[in-house]
Image (tube, rainbow over all chains, first blue to last red; front, side, top):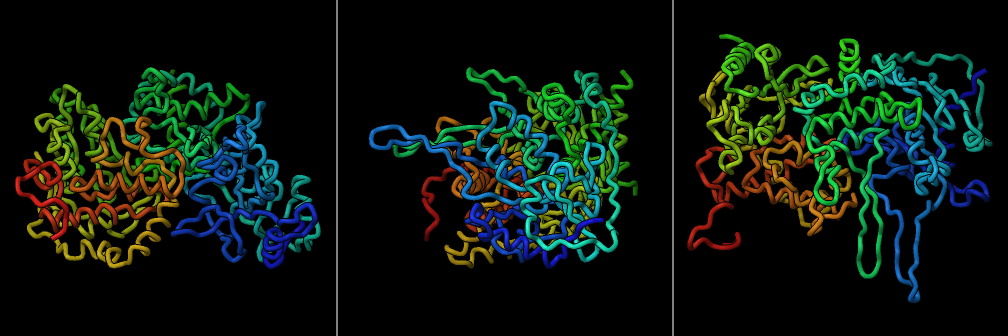
Length: 339
Length: 290
């Protein structure tokens, strides 16, 4: 039998999360959920369940921004009684990320490797450990998405703690992990009478053995030709649930130092500029190839059996000049066959 | 009359066959099968992919700077607003007119587009357009318009912001700037933003820190707007590409409006006219008062 939660109970449960329920969660939890903002849907910290958007395709930015924020203060160094004091920020309370899509949950699973492999990134690790992921299965495929070609699916529960799937007036509930079960503790679930969830079929992309195909296409003039129209903005990297490049600088003021980390992109000119002025990837073609090679080849080489793309399709949708990773995967496979 | 596509393809093929041209820039169909994307044709065969319709939104003049040092000439398909951008680059001595062939398109207006989402809604820049014919061209395609559309409504939205109190304006912009993710797509899509090193990337002096926060974001957008004062040709690409929908055209057109009112100047209309901020006249009053 399938467990289900009524929409009314779901809202009450979400409301309840934000307030104190147990001694351990005396402060309640930080609830992050999709909300409407200036005509877009974004994940934001909410304080009213009424603000949450339950029906949406996907958000502009992926929820990676809550684990690897666009700007993060890693630590503050200051003087205290004549001695240096290092203050590292921590989360005020545990968090629940509600409404994460399976593609974005896979994205977190992928960047767990660079961030959690030892030595682990302390800021990322804390946020991952103290956040419960409540997934929301897709009830429609976006025209740009291709998740089933990249190792996940519109109803994939593998990378979340709890999975919800819309089923008429209810949501089907799968408690996937112990963290998920704990969050559901005491919630009035019921048995689903019938199961009538929508069948979602995203478009397919020929991603099998894309790594070896990339190797064959590596030296092609193709990359600089695609780069011709690239304007080298950072949109693709910033909307991507996997891209995890960053820049670090120190802010100094009044005897205090803040070490700040912000997103960066391999597409930006100067990203690989070194002290002394040398630039490893000075031209547009080299930078263009880097982004796709990192996703389709290097991640697999470095971590084993890993592709750095989840098929969410955001880069396809938001690229101002239509650089389309699905077209690139197709072209790379063709080049590999021809070679 | 022959279709725009055919006229553009014929001319591009001719240019590329001549051997004097490195490439011709125009538009081809995007992967959604509906909208358009930039195409760089290097061979006569590639020229067969050119299309032109109401979804050819990109300002291709943005790419001309990349060809500045090329020995050969380049061809470009340019809408009226794009030709103003070309004039800007000629005026600022960034490109050599003699190595440029402009296929000017007298356009019918461009519709708002997103990938896979063409609309029938005219873009803001077309609604406020005062020059529907190319101001510069070697070949003109499309129907030349003898009448310019009334530009009276051009600054209605700007005037509405001007009418607000300082606090309201600050609140309005803080709300929008707080959403900025500093991807710099606005700069990267801009014809006028061709600096070898942008102030925002400079480390010494450090003008703007890397924190993505309201203060830093405000500095970024304000300084960028001032750097474009008297230079922005209102193609509005920055606003189109912004992934978080910041209404940048309000900033740019406020400065354009001031330029018109104070100096009767509009950027890019004529490459031989020196812009107000590039001149100093004896006896000129400093400041904008009285």
